[in-house]
Length: 94
Image 1 (cartoon, rainbow, N blue to C red):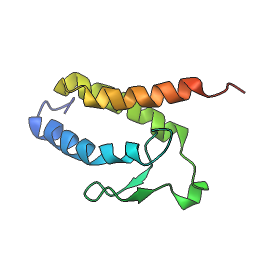
Image 2 (cartoon, helix red, strand yellow):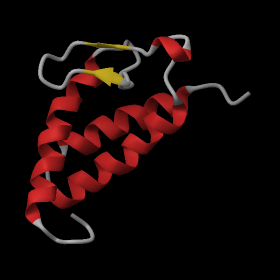
Image 3 (tube, one colour):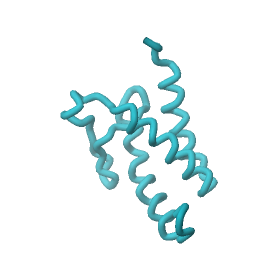
Image 4 (cartoon, helix red, strand yellow):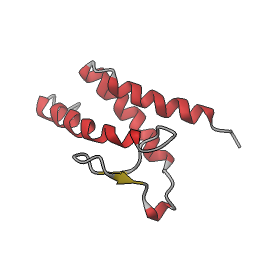
């Protein structure tokens, strides 16, 4: 959408993101799981990571959600991003 300005890409981003929002309700921390069925909401943490989240994946969501809020004026996406930021801010710095 950013490159073309074609609204179809923004509409599709919103559609995909609305399905992925369910991923945030699957962990106690509020961080999103990486494997989610956007239709059913069924999902889990990936086995190949030892059932751990990948920081880069979680953190990139913050950028994407913040931008989607800017483009759509829908604060739900930035609220999900804030949950990630707040959780990461509380982790020990060792």
